[in-house]
Length: 226
Image 1 (cartoon, rainbow, N blue to C red):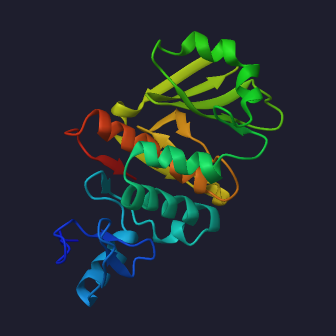
Image 2 (image 1 turned 90 degrees about the vertical axis):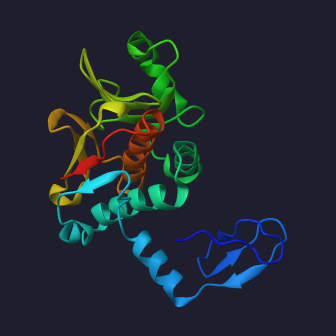
């Protein structure tokens, strides 16, 4: 959408939360959105961000599945509407991190504390944990995924592998049985797993990793979605 300024005070207009008007954050003026702008907004809200992704797959069938559809819609929402890793992290903390197998600082933190030593042994000095995901009822801290401000970390028994956000070149969707997971760089040992039953936290996690990647390397190549 092209840049528009308030005719009353010349400030930059912002799209309202309802996406039905343009609003001035300074003088409070509101303006109706014309048909052309509405069409652009509708298209943007349903598309992957072309500045971040090269889409090499038709996701139409996947989007018809309940969990996978919500996962994809959340990726698009986080990138197109929130736009920064900080905003996505706040979005995750406010409503998406819940249940008995996900945790973050101040949220179900006992899960993290149970394996704190193991995680800390792998963390870099300035690395911060954003999200913890236990990989199942029977694993109980034996297999888990940790998302930090630098990378995705995958713990299985005594092994830890990781993928730095800045090194993500490809994300491949696997949604067998409507359980969306995203393989990083075609490596079967490195995947952002299905986080919960709605798919939203999974989508937000994917978006977070991608946004951090581009915040760290603004001129990097786009990420292929396959």
